[in-house]
Image (cartoon, rainbow, N blue to C red; front, side):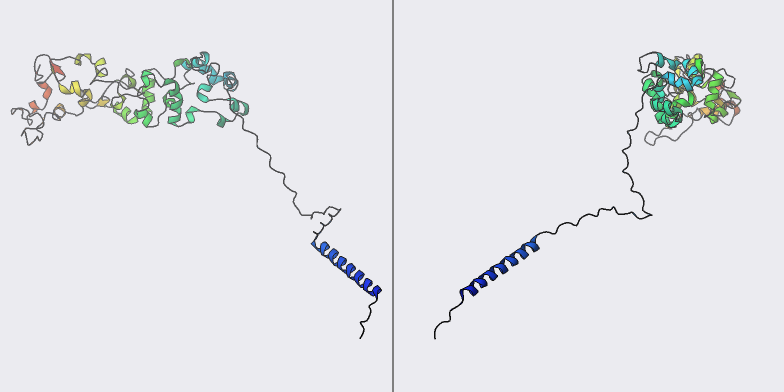
Length: 344
């Protein structure tokens, strides 16, 4: 059977239809792979809700704090004229007029610190007031100039510093004017010391005392308020030098036969320096009681079989009244030139 002949026109149309279909499918595939275009922004602005808070502005950078500087003493005088006029008459005014300390023309600020901020605002918290500082900080200001002076040799170790008593407790920088930084008359000195040492001042009210209440002496005749290597800030260095012997020179010696406490322990081993009920200002009401504190039959060492104290001779019968006052016979209790027993 003969093969059927195909129509060439139909074959051409079939190829054309297939090509068109293939190109359409490729175009659809490229369109799906392309990214979507962003939506167009609306032309009208969105209206905020009626209760919406306005956006807060970014905080501004704080300005750098103003640095303090020297204002000069004239700025201080403008407000504190009465204090300034009193201070001009005081010994500290030398800081204002001499360049030695580096505060010429600004002496107030040598103690109170830089005053430019205080002068501009009047704020008391912007200035340094030594009277309102702790004792350690106030002393630090004073000792910046007075540290190596001999009179302040023990200031940092004595009882005043340990008890938080600062320099400005006794020294008035502005108040005394030409009279100096501290009171000078004996009665005024004693009143100032008695303000704190009331128990000691009460001892001076006993019948027999050193003449402080009468104003003939002052506390600083025997004590160094700035400090001392001796107990109670005494000015004595070796035994009684120079405290007691400055007035009681007849007890100085040197003696051929010395009484040991006078040389090594000092007068306070037998005497009350402030006041006593005994006419000789002894530590005990009776003389014999003072002597027997050392001259008594104390227990001794077993190895040497000797008493620890000095045993009075057998004829010293302390029950008899004639032996109860040692100084009837031992008259030279501070030292003798003739007798080792201090009889004459």
